[in-house]
Image (cartoon, rainbow, N blue to C red):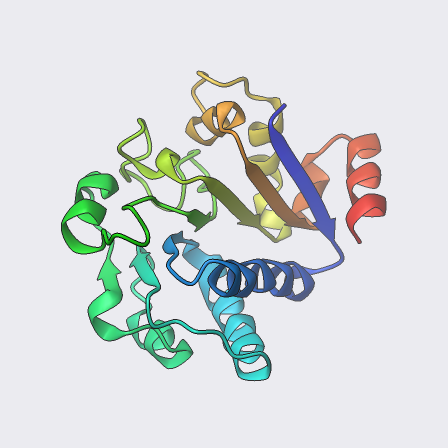
Amino acid sequence: MAMNFKVFDDQLTAANYVADLFRKQMNNNPTSIIATALGNEADAVLVELLADVKKTPVDTSQIHIFDYDKKQAEYLNIGIVESQYHKGGKENIMPLIKEKAKTKQNKGKLTTLFATVTGGGSIGYKNLDQGDENGLRAAREVVILITGHDKVDIVRNLYRTEAGGRFEAANLKTHRMVNVVLDKDAAQGLPEDMREYFYQMYS
């Protein structure tokens, strides 16, 4: 399985971890192109990300954000240049990147996708462009955040379903780099031995 699971005590800790990955991505690659489809996980991550950036500033002058969560004000507050904030839509993202964000420095590559998984198995939201290499799967790295006891079935389906099955997000098992970040509640969808293993390794 290509997915790397990480289990944390609670939603706040999981959101903080994802926010730290987000800040480090911007810091380590200041020409990053990042897509966000975090759904109901977005607010918690953005609060932590803003706190992180205030504590440890990063150069966001060349960062491009393609946002499916409609959180423009939050990203501008973090320091994203307004002309480099883009609202995500239903069309394939890679042609959008080529049109609106490609530079000599970033080469038009989608660096990272930060997302969640819906009950129906979609990444972020239903009907997103996630089925081919012109869509969100084109991201070099994918970070999935799933928290809350109401997400147990989502985690169970994600873990059990083989790539190519009816649970769409399971197709990410063929992706080269996917991190799935859970809190203890959502992690109840994993087998007990795996849940304990991932918690001991990454807590």
